[in-house]
Length: 76
Length: 163
Image (cartoon, rainbow over all chains, first blue to last red; front, side, top):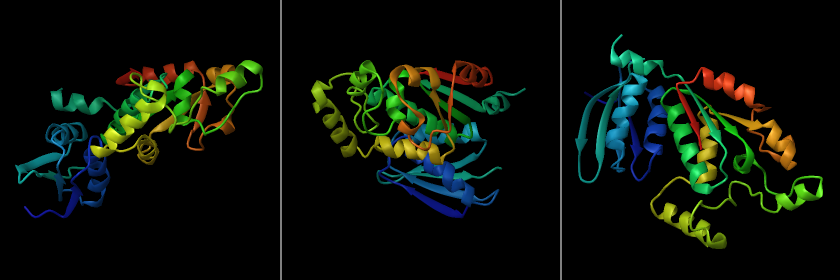
């Protein structure tokens, strides 16, 4: 699962991780993976909710050292 | 129809911004940008005190009352929080606190909303009453409309908010 692009949203607060994700996903091809790095604890629930409402797939999530990593597959 | 498909029906959001309080306007723009980021066609209607969020800086109005009122009509940088404003100290305090926590400042949030395709509409009637002309509003405002336009939009919306 190699990400096509990585979005560094570290340090950003609500609603920016989601807003930037929605902008960045457009630069990933359909079926490709976007990796998102975030430090906002709210992004754990919010990235999942965003994936649900936009129909993209959250294929993985990981908590590193104070950084959350999300892997999102662009579905359309 | 599965629950998943049902969520995809929500395609339109209409938000009335009546308040001119910094915190409430902030909430309105956060919700609007997030809705737009979620693929929802989003419209914001600014009416009464909410017009301050889309107003340029400076005095407006022709009549004595309108000129008096314009002393209290701020732009997006000048509006204060709904509580603890303390004559402007609270505005400064909240701006500092939000900066410390890396929260996007209000003027940037508004720009972000426009960039994300959020439509900004101004209320024609309250503009007239308060003596605010189209040229007193920022260029990003797409139209000046009445309540019927909001109702028509809201009627098609899955999310309607009054802030």
